Length: 408
Image (cartoon, rainbow, N blue to C red; front, side, top):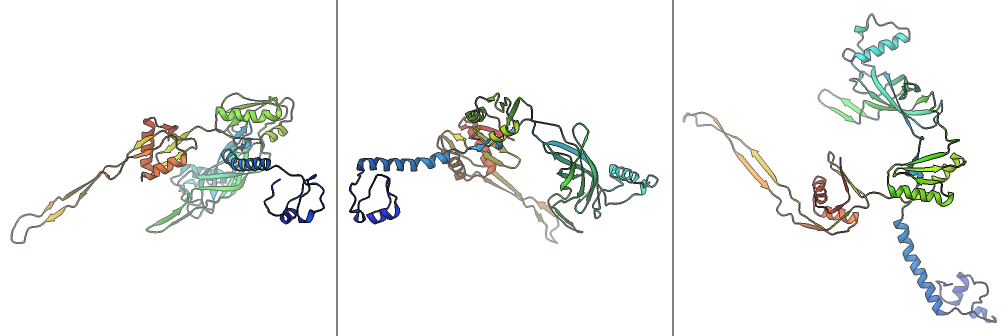
C-alpha cells in the first residue's frame, strides 16, 4: 500500500495499517517485528497505477453505448394515425368566407340541422366570418384504452386567416379502416401572433395551424397483445449490419441464444415460454455501441451540411473562387441649350466590374483526418455553406471523400 503522506505521524493519522503489518515510527518502538516491502515491488505497483489512470479515461471516452430501447422498436408497438373533419367556431371575424367557401357553408348548415335549426331556405343569406372548416389529425398511441386522452392538431382547410380564440366542435377521428377511434373537441391554441393594419401587417408563427392539448378522447382500443407470443421482433431505427449483430450479442450474453439478427433492421427474439413483458423490459436496458455509416447529408435548398463522426478525407488539394460580374446601368439625360435647338435624348452609361477572387490560394487537406479537423480545414478556406457544398461534391468526385454523399 502506498500512502500519499510522508512521515510516521501522517501515516498513522491518514492511512490504515494492514493486518499482519506493524508500522515503525516513534509511536511504535515496542513493536516486535516490522514487515518490510521491497522497493522493487512498490515501484512496479506504482507504475501499474499510472498505467491504469492513463488508459481508463481513454476507454471511457471512446465507447459511447446506448440503451437498446433508444435505438430499436418492438414490432407491433406503434402509433396509429387518425384524421377527421370539423368546424372551429367563435373566431373574431377571421374565419372562412361562406360565399366562396362552399364546403364550410354546407357543413354549417348540416350541423345546425342536426341541432334542430333549419337554415336551408336561407342558406344563400348566411354571411358570417366566425366559422372555419378544419382538418383534425392525431396519433393514437399503442395500447391506448378507451377514456384516455390524446393531443390533436387542427389545420385550416378554407380561406380562414386566423384560428386564435376558436373552439373546435365535436369531431370524430377515423382510422385507416374508417372506424371511429377518438373524438376531439376543445379550445384551440395557435401560439401565433397576427396583427393587420391598413398599410402593414405583422405575423409570427402560423395562425392557421393550432393544437389542442389532451383534446381527444379515445373511444376504441386497437387490439394487440404480447402475451402468448413465441417470437418478438426488434426493429432498428437506423438499419446496420454491425449494430444488429451487436444487439443480438448483447441479448445473448445473459439469456442464451434467444436473439438472432435476421437482417440489418430486424433482430428476432425467441421467447421460449418467457413472459414477454418482463423479458422485453429487461433487454431494453442493455447497452450496445451502435455503428454508423460514414455519411454526409446536404440540403441544397437551405444550404445545410451534416457530417457523421466516421467521415474521413484522403489527401486532396482545394482551391475555391467565384467569378462575379457586376453590370451597372446609369443612363443620363442629355438636354440641349434653349437656343441651340435639337432634341432631348437619353445617353446610356454602362459600368462593368469583374471580380475573380484571385487572392484565394490552394489549400491542402491531409489524409485520414478526423471530423473536427476536416471542419476546421474547410472553415480555413473562408467559404460559406453554399461553396462548401460544391467543395464536398468536388472532393467526392475526386474519390477523396471516404463517405456516402447524400444530396436532398
